[in-house]
Amino acid sequence: MTSVFGADGKNVPCTVIEVGPCVVTQIKSVEKDGYAAVQVGFQEAKEKNTSAPLMGHFKKAGVTPKRHLAEFKDFSTELNLGDVLTVEIFNDVNFVDVVGTSKGRGYAGVVKRHGFGGVGQQTHGQHNRGRKPGSIGACSYPAKVFKGMRMAGHMGNQQVTTQNLQILKLIPEHNLLLIKGSVPGYNGSIVSVLK
View (cartoon, rainbow, N blue to C red):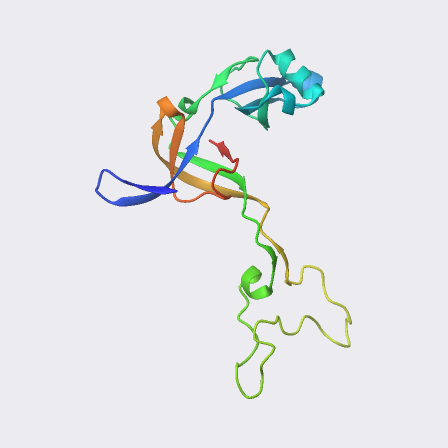
């Protein structure tokens, strides 16, 4: 993340995303695959680090090995194998959705994970229940804990979509996209930018 000054002189926080170049590695059709989609590859990979089946897949498409593959539906333009997609596909777009994997927080308690306030006061002899969840269900009927009860557990490391983020600027010579605000994931993680 960084910040830029807008036309009105305000300092706007933004995220810089490298969008491509992405290469079309496969075109899926309804007749052959049951659905229509375009598979694209991003970032160069070494041949020695690519499996033999994937190498055959890339050679069939006539492209060099790629590190990341993703499928996208509903492309407005007709694409062919080997076509290169750059940041210029967002020229006439003002808002985008960004899909990424959120930062993993490991095993977290209810205060951090769900925003619980803790139990009761921190005095009058109470010393070990400050960040506990409290009661989790009835005792006699139904004599069980219902599904979906908010408890401690694994937090983060899930797919998150941030919607309607404004595009501040395109830098075509470096394939960079400046988006207002933050996006899910850690620095350098892979995200999908959708119109």
